[in-house]
Length: 371
Image 1: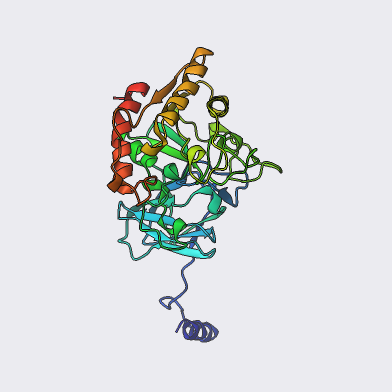
Image 2 (image 1 turned 60 degrees about the vertical axis):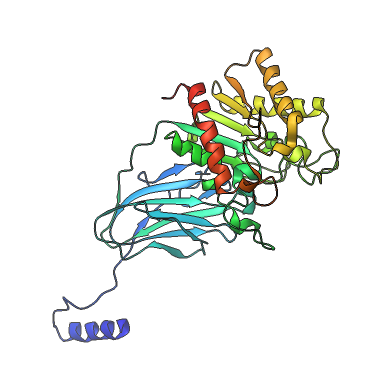
């Protein structure tokens, strides 16, 4: 039909007939990644104005726009993303590289987009080349940021592993929704923006399937990098905290150090030294900012994990580091029930993440002086 209309237009023009009213293809409005009206949250590599990249879980983008549709030009062969328009329930999709429809057939007017990466950093790199709007549509000035920002550093629990469905075969990455883990949940309860730096299987000094002596990347190694990597060698873009300043970092580490497949259970000295190094690394990246350390979530880690995390906090406090705090989760009783886990006593379901967020809310607020 479109081809016939074009041929007809050419004929009429050749005959000197006006072509107004004939159907023509609308030109999409291209929006570059560096458009000032786009808001980015979490760790993004913005060094290339034509292609922003990320490789951390739960990064997100907000935009206000006019028109009846919006598309994203994003390449990400492995990761899942979710989109919400005007507060609608999230829809999960997998970017294909070409312009992917986020919404269409909207009512004419002003709309809000929230675009969230659901899967953690090791799944791959997202390449964002921009957005497409209707002919004549545009981005509008963004809403004001919340004025509070929290960062969460952890393992698969912080990444939201197994919180979005039942594990069946190879669908581990399909049932992870980092935005619905306890970190983003408690941030929303506290009216704060957030950033997530979490990796499944990662430990303080001993990863889930680590050899000993360890030769793998641990959190204190990669925390300083903008993008996830499992390689210590090579060039890494270094994270500049000024790009997304945080008010506090919450650390929830230690579960994998004591997990059953571990070939070596760390001694107290090894664990505390590694945890102290992690605290020091985070403070170096975020000078003067609050650090809150929680005991590992699963109750089976036991008193050892709780006491050793607290020992690391006690040590840095004794050495003069200020604004470092410890929060126990399973003392005097376990925070979560077995029904709150995904049949493994380790990874919380949505109910479990809700419980953790509710438990942390007032404690974080008290430490931060937030009303």
